[in-house]
Length: 111
Image 1 (cartoon, rainbow, N blue to C red):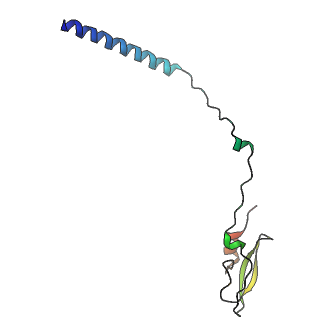
Image 2 (cartoon, helix red, strand yellow):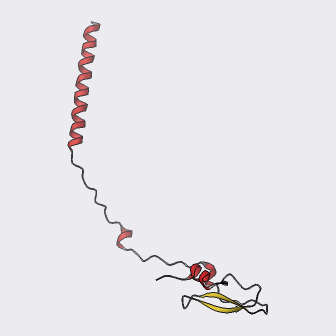
Image 3 (cartoon, rainbow, N blue to C red):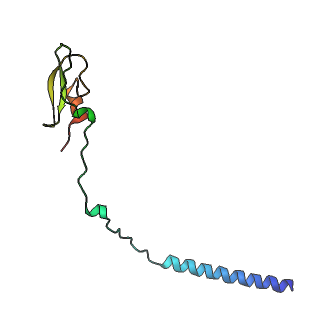
């Protein structure tokens, strides 16, 4: 009886292996289906990205209360340009750059 049981198990195992190999062969022969992305609500109503300027660039011109006369640059948001001004030497705000290039790199909005 034990040999019959082993033979039956062997037959069942062979049938399962054959079935799995047929399923894998069928899957390998299947042609891939291209995935087409569906449009979303966001892609249909795309807005241009907001240009963000550093907060220090939006501060008003402030020469400070001291009386020195140091040439500095500040970002003029109305003109999108870095312009010179006379800095008093103390206080003021962060919209004060020693070099025009530094001001432009930090604040200039590129079109």
